[in-house]
Length: 206
Image 1 (cartoon, helix red, strand yellow):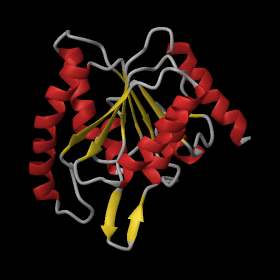
Image 2: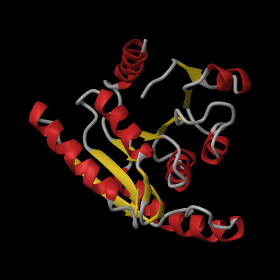
Image 3: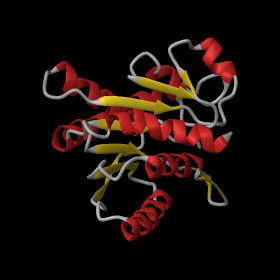
């Protein structure tokens, strides 16, 4: 069943591969303490990128400026990808983290605005065809910048959001923000599809 769902996402991606070339993938790792590191978002997003056609190139990975683990995973992933195909053009872009774990909501506003200051020039420079993200707060300023490109008539950026497999009954905060803004919003549990009718449910994607 998992293989079938994964192939379904591949089919979705292949439909647009002829039109979309430049990919921006938002990657994040939340570091809680020195001995408690969660790399779930990074692992999931790299699995999604792996399922995409090699025509999605160049690939621009957007990570938080304090995130060292994701960079290592991306380099390892792209090295293995280069061995299987010629289209290995990629960059790693850094922006300030929108919100740290346990950060207060009031201070999160200021840090998100700071992240926006870096996201806007990045997106105007890269001008991706597609932004692929899956939950970290870093998604919000990047997607907002992508939407602005469209509103200004510069370029239509397709926003694809995949909610984490960990979200069973309710969306993450990032998911709630991006649900009405995304072009395609994937959930991995039928219970979420029932609550959020705009979402797409294929089963477990990653």
